[in-house]
Image (cartoon, rainbow, N blue to C red; front, side, top):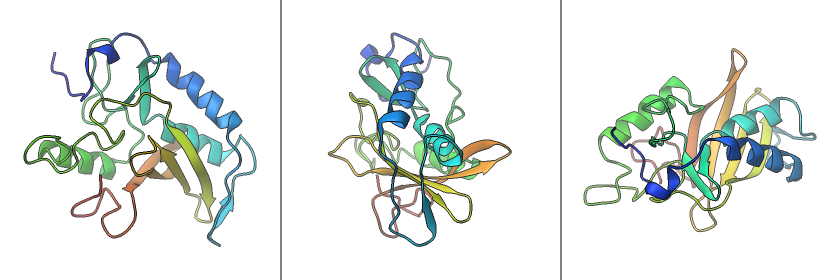
Length: 190
């Protein structure tokens, strides 16, 4: 079996149950976000489109063992996950862009790599804490902007979620600010 993940063996032991409990805990315990732009409407409850988009964005991460969080693209011996971001809540354009960058070793941590780790989790060895939604804001065009803190030492990951056919998908991802923030830019931030 080819391992596509950047994680080590300790990540490969158990199922996906931790993600569901973490999503439930974060969607109940986090305060409602506020918006700093006039085009956004702040979330006011733990239900509805903003909560649905937030929950979908959190599926970018899964926990095969307690205390270990991996990207939705990780392949492990105990999980049967789709290849090339197939289990991720991404639009076709975002999947294609991530697959293209991965095929060119853009995320590789060694010589010739640009990011030094996985784009989604922002590290080589997974995360030891639950990714935290810092804000989820409904925009006037029906999209939801979800900002996720992966770990305090790396820039936040922003998912721009759009509902299509009843399913929330990221139509863009961004790390940091500026012209290279978007995953769709020529040389995206990591």
